[in-house]
Length: 296
Ligand code: A3P
Image (cartoon, rainbow, N blue to C red; front, side, top):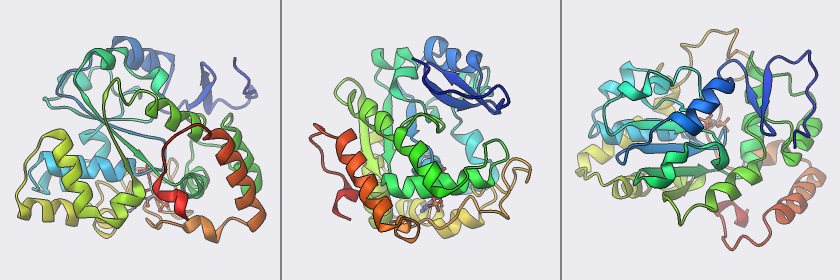
């Protein structure tokens, strides 16, 4: 099963049932806690993403909705403390003490998710992004992160991404297919980065409706304004500037990098894009859904 071969000289990663996780924030204990011991409450709201798909953005949107549009919390507490990751070492002991409704983030593929989710009424918001843009964002993230290997040439990293075997959290395709596969078993809202960008207000209202929160127009305006790219790029609680350079070197690439759709066009050659499309159609076959990014 563990087809990925990591050299012993690569302590940055661990392999958990075939999927790579960075060891700076995960270990077998934290993954076991998330999957087997964490108790999901009916009121829990999960922000689930494949990395670089809008995780921080949804953390901000959820915080602001939860605060009825009041930006105080979103400007004074780091995003990762407000909407913490369930699979990271810091979760155990912290999540149990959070007031309900808990806002929780996860990059976990569905097979590693807390088992108790499937016996709960908890809500899951799954945000997906055009995989080509996800790839470009992930490439830059590997470049600036001290806890990830140097991604090397884009072509090499693209092959790793498409094979899904040698990137953190595994295959983008498996992640998406896995979560879409449980959409009738859990309370799940599927939303895309592209939708958030194209219609921020409509998206915020969609999220409000899903989590059963009624906000007035002024509060919705505040959620939209305080979760804009510009606002989040300037906000120390969302732009990761609190993290030391040794962990995230923003001189190499800012965490809030571009925040746009279609940046892949600046990076892919025609041949790479065509190859990507072939792999995409193969891996996504029999999925009877059209995605926002399928059109371009
Ligand atoms: P880019 O690298 O393409 O700019 P994650 O939070 O999942 O790690 O995703 C990070 C990506 O989301 C980055 O993409 C970042 O710029 C983008 N992002 C974060 N907040 C955003 C916002 N409010 N609007 C648009 N993009 C945002």
